[in-house]
Length: 262
Ligand SMILES: [Zn+2]
Ligand SMILES: [Zn+2]
Image 1 (cartoon, protein in one colour):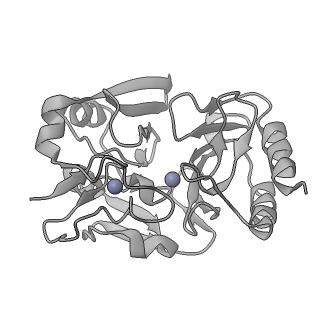
Image 2: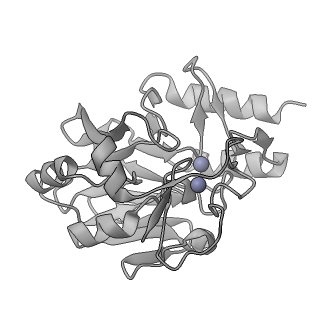
């Protein structure tokens, strides 16, 4: 039976025989002090549900309630040439299947980094689409389904001026989605490539957020340069509160300078 790690929400294939979750045992996450616990998709369907929130007419947030895993959210991006699921959550219930189908289904699933792999192959199968993951993070894909497409390079163009941009940092393959038509200068869905603080006034950019492992100064400099070449004025991050629509460039720039200060 496929099992899902309760701590991070990653689903592992039937032939996965390690006692511990490979994602949680990696240095960026942690096995809870109470120990490794598993569940199944069936159990999750019985105990949790998906909740959909409209951010605007082209963008919807999808979360699991009550909270499960890291508390991550996915986004449904509606676009003329095909809808995109950005990042993934491990619950694929009838509620979300019906909602997405009503909106025209999915043409692609694109994922920022390994903390969102969830049960992505089941989503891909349900909606008959591909999953786009940067090739730098290939080694973290435990369930190597046939829908997975590894892209490489800095930028990958989907359609309608929507691109996946590799930023790196948190993971080498960490990527963001840029949707230019959703705001004046473009909307960025960033996963936790950048992590907006509860003050809404600072972005942490780290190797690991829960374990507080910083990135090297050279990496922050490289990310600064990389971000300067992208157009955006709005950022939606990992958690539901991380929606930033005002002073975005200013807050990003100020945060990077703070990371670089000696
Ligand atoms: Zn895990
Ligand atoms: Zn992460």
